[in-house]
Length: 412
Image 1 (cartoon, one colour):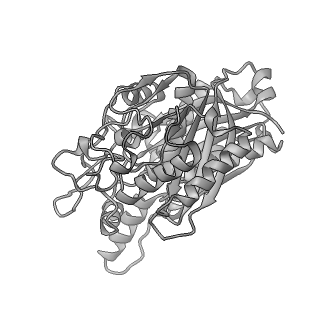
Image 2 (cartoon, helix red, strand yellow):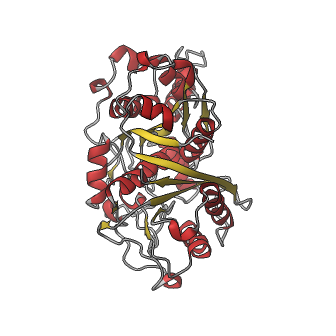
Image 3 (spheres, helix red, strand yellow):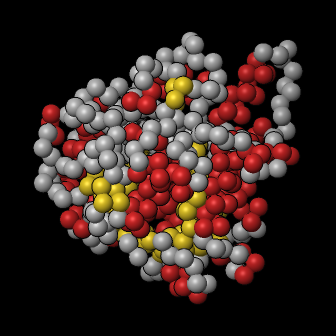
């Protein structure tokens, strides 16, 4: 099978509107959480989130074009443009029939859906829907728009596996290139979920933190006082490329992807298996796919959303795979970015790729009183980034419905 390398990265996140700013904020332990500005939260249990900062889509996209797209598609286009530039890609010199887009989102155009349905409900019953309503809302429009903009005629579809979505996209892209079905695939995910319906819905399921007194401290994975996740928004884009193709065009090779594993908890609609059964199987599958032993992993970016059950079950799975005395570094970057749902795997993959590239492990912030069950176990990279040799990094993502997706990246 073909080797697959990473040749471009792009990101728009609550910690920065490009990869450089994102990585700098991440390694400096900065929280992206703040009071919500997108709507009036006075009657909501949760009043904060990790929103993008200083963002105006018209800085990136023409006004007429922006009107056609929901925010999640706008975020996708912006992140992809950065990744293409980062990868020094000129599609005019490449076979566009062999270049694809596999992109994910958990909620798609939920903002558009909410707006259009509310306007109809508040009207006189006449269906005056926007002609762009459906194409703005559907999840698969993002990879479609990316391919249209750049004339890419290869494999093109969307994945949806809740918060495992963009890791699923990355694994699919990895496999298609390995199998010789494409030379290059743009992959990743985007999410724009900071809306009344999304925040209200997650509040109803008791998944969100309500630590309104100090939003910056609200996401505290592994801490005994954690009370739910913090919503985030944004996108991450990754260029995956067949190794020989990248060499032929003299591409800047950042890292290599060597493994992907998927599994299911088969347990509960929204809760994780108490012993992390799916997480355990997903990590084992990724290691087997990469032909690596667990001791070869230097850094693990955990799913760790700061929910009471989820964090504990993941650490139990980590203990089963790596042992309590493992030398690997673990961190939960959602303590800073919040949880980007379907885009989480993409920006966390970028964090792993940068860790491999720079031998720097980003920290877990806010976590002070660690679960007693894990006292003395694991290096959770608390509070400050740590410098160490990172040859292999693993990224975990889990989604409502029990979806599990794990990726492994290698130093090139």
